[in-house]
Amino acid sequence: MTLHSPVYPRGTRVAVRPGRLPIDARLVGRNGTVVALDDYRPRHYGVLLDGESQPRDFSQDELAPGGP
Image (cartoon, rainbow, N blue to C red):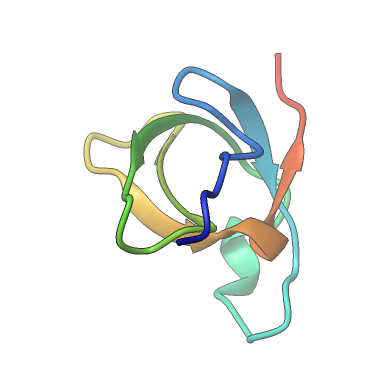
């Protein structure tokens, strides 16, 4: 059994960046807070972007540390 430790724990401020798969270009550069982790989908994060009320799903390669 492999144990995965999240790179971005809940409450971490992150910025959206381009990843391996194309994403909406309007999201790149936006900041948000990690609000959800899923043990069954490691390296995926629920991020509440600033100014939004629903979290969005991002893979680890689409996120970078950052944001005020």
